[in-house]
Length: 221
Length: 189
Image (cartoon, rainbow over all chains, first blue to last red):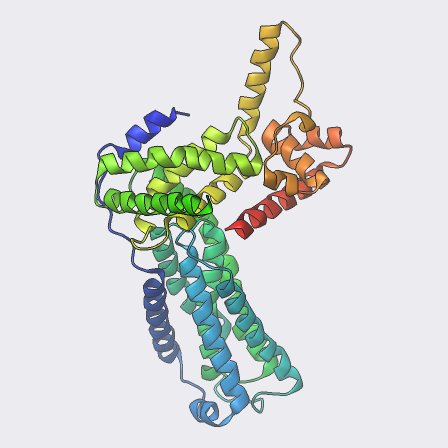
């Protein structure tokens, strides 16, 4: 280890100006909007939307609650993740709020086994919806990782895992509209693949992290 | 008295924020001054929480490096201390998790023993070490496991032998102790 004086001298020598990073909320909003556009566009490109799904969304309050809870869970989760990428910015309430809404949303899935949100139907069934959820989620996940590591997340694998979960939840939620509607199908082929994306995200983040450290050492940031 | 303390606190806060903004603009002398001022502040912060140990200098240097890498994330107009201490807390826990203290500690022990012409000593007893307030807040089993493995630098097997528990139990205690330490530090923020 060098002496502190040597370190201070090397850090302050040839100091290059840096542009303060964009506010975390702006980055979160940008990522969220771009990802939503991507998810909606790709889902429509990969197959037809369940006939009558949007009419059901208008007229079935329980279905509305599910979708709205999902939307808010994703918004709060994304907001919290981007806040966590700036040291000291994330407060204590937001993670609890995000986690609480996410649990409420997931409880809705469990509740649908007892009291179906919509009459179960095979109408609109997509052959590979589970794979679609994962494939659609990966590009936003990687784009999000790129944005996160441009900030300074103190616990990158954790932040990345949660961001990957949010990336997975977006197509999982939209697949509830696009694909057939049945409680077990929703959990197994839409929700669980979305959750699996977060595991993929943690693995990618753990591999990404050493590269990030090397870059820091080489002073390439 | 309290007002004077608050005034110093606010003056420091404002000065550091201004120096950081200048540093973001490429002002090297301001940056050097900022880092020179922050070094002792971080050292006191860590020492008061985990104790006065060999590795303090390493933690401070890690934190200085992290401040350098994260300097673009400080937002002008925002409070400086939460940003700074979030980094310091993280670097402290990271350092303890990585367990790099063993070689330095043992090297010092050997040097002390050689100087006194005594046979090489085993690790210093846990009780003889200085503990910061957060280390004291850990339960005794957690503190012992953390101190033996991460501060004194024994292997898990050696610590297990000393504590008369299994190696797995040592790993669990260390893991829980680090988690608890992180939570205690975050709760302070």
